[in-house]
Structures are given as structure tokens and as C-alpha cells.
Amino acid sequence: MNPTEAIPLLIVVLLMISIGGGDVQEMSVTFQGDNDIDSLADVHVVAGGTTTVPADATLEGDVYVIGGTAAIDGAVDGDVTLLNGNLSVNDGATVTGTLQTYSGAAVISSDASVGHVSQFEPPTPSSSPAQRIGAFLLQFLVLGAFGWWLAERHPSIIENVGAAITEHTLVSAVIGSLAATTLLVLFVYMAFTLILLPLAIVGLFAEFLIVLYGQAVFGYLIGMRLPIEADGVATLAGIAAFLLVLELLGLVPYLGGIAQLGVAVVGVGAVLNTYFGLQRFEPITIPGGT
Image 1 (cartoon, rainbow, N blue to C red):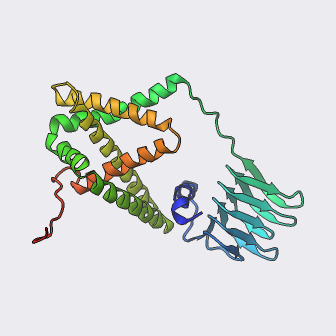
Image 2: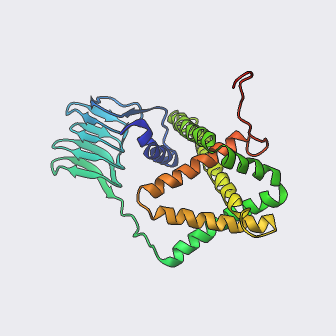
């Protein structure tokens, strides 16, 4: 598992650490290769490769496994959490705290000493039509209210973002993909310091809002092509149609997800290129160029 693939689970780990309220100052991560660890900072995350706690080692801290393989032959004076990957607690090993399993494969020897073993049982997901319709309506109400407000109160702003989507789609896609990836990695590495974790969470939430902003503009563009005179009402109708298309794309394996991602990055790029719609985007021209 490379650092980019591990980002979502690393975010989960950081949130779990933050919610737990522990006094954590430093965190280390292994992504690949074979690693023997005989000491910890405060928290160690196994994101890939194989990490082993040797039989003669005693670690004081917590271990999180989000990918790869972790083998405990010695002692961990703390908690061990398995979010993904493989974990083995072998003969003679000791875990003084809680061994919590959410996903992945855990093998615990009968000759190992574990303070407490807990396995997360996820609730059975319900795919009832009523719940799916409810979720769709909630998303429509949020995006619809925002899109209507922009179309009625600030039409020039939504027009600027829409123009960047339709007239400069490729540029918006490139900028959106680079910005989204860069910001995501930046916020995660900020969170690694733990001191900046609250700021990183705010940044990730802001990035999510930018994605929603772009979706509202896509709905506006669809609405402007409908035979409806009132811009606000047309935007509402366009957002409903856009969300319906996204739902249908989600039913298509692989290609549907790629299409959804493409729409998201184009929207993000258009929002950023226009400074959130405050300025019309015009590509840079080179003087004297042909």
C-alpha cells in the first residue's frame, strides 16, 4: 500500500487518536519492506510491508494496522487496532491493552496474553427504497438551496464557474486533480503532527465543500438548458437531474466511479480557477505567441 492509497485509513487513525484524547506527540508509519521495531514513538501505523515486534522487544505505545502484515512476537504495552491487512499475535506474545479488530484477518495464539479482545460488528446495511430516497432528497435539499441562492442572488458568480467548466474543461480537470490530491496529502501530513490535527480536519471539510460547490454548478448548467424561465427554479431542476445521473453512474462498475471522479475534479478545478466564482477565468496567453 503506497502513501496515497493509505490516506483514507490514516485519516481514520488520526480521528481515532483525537477522539481517544491520548497525549500523543509523535507517530511513525511503515509503508513497505520488512521492518523490525523494538521501540515506539507514541503510535506506530503499519500501512504496508511486514512489520514484526521481536520476541525480546517491549513496546510502550499503540499499534494500528491499516495494511500489510503485522506480527507480534514480543510485548506491546498498549492497544493494538486492526483496520485492514493481517495481524498475528504469536506464542508468548503480550498485548496489555485492547486488541480491537474492525476488518482484516487476525490470528491470536492461545499461548499469547491479551488484555482484552474486541471485534467490531458493523450494523447490517439497509438498502430499503425509503432510505435511499431519503438520502437523495437530503442531498438535493442541501445542493438545491445553495444552487438556488447562487442563481438568484449571485448569478455572475455561478456563471463564472459554469463558464470555466464548459469552456475550459481540460484545464479545470488538470487543476482540480492536482489541487485535490495535493491538498489531501498536505492535510494528512499536517495531521501527522497531531498538533495541527484540528486544522487538518477543517481543511478536509473545506475540500469536501468545494466538491459540493462544483456539483451545484453542474446542476445549474443543466438547468439553464431546460425550458424554464426562472433561473432559480431551473437550477433546482438541473440539480435534481444531475444527482439522478450521478446515482445512475454509481450503478456502473468501475467506469461509473471514474466518471463520478472526473466530474468532481472538473468542478473543483473550475471553482479554484475562478477564485470561487469571483473572477472570470481566462487562460494565460504568451505575448507574441502564435
